[in-house]
Image (cartoon, rainbow, N blue to C red; front, top):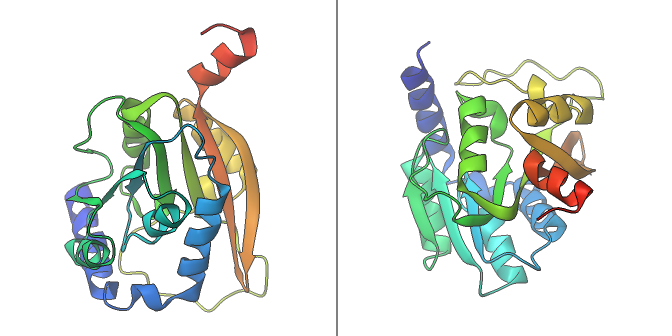
Length: 214
């Protein structure tokens, strides 16, 4: 399947879920947990990649009203719900691997339960490095390998790849390849769902902090 075909499959799948997506308690609670994990002390501009209905941005707005919020998604149906729920944020239909966002314009990137569905995750991670300001960082939430009884097979209507993000060790390797370090992480569990919430810091920023340079 070509990259454009994969993008179209993701778009169709999430357009179909847009009207009911906010009914998921797991997704609502996870958005609150990710927002609570963010250090907002030096954050002004937030970009939520694959924002869906904007649940994470809504949770961040509850924490700090003055944040400038932008959400991008490939699904216009999801963005329509997001826009109705948080009309003062900026909502942009965009491929995660080609963000229409200026260089060094964002203090915090969030990306929740989406990396596995992005057709070109390495290109998307390169975009994060491009748009982050010095001192900026990213927060992700990714599904950990299922640890209970084997679930029934599910038919997912688009290609996905959980493996690079499915444990702390794998996430660290993926981050390092993309020029990031995992600065801290925590596991979040909701019934059978286990997710890894992690802070990604550009490696150059880690190196400067370690040797005392600016």
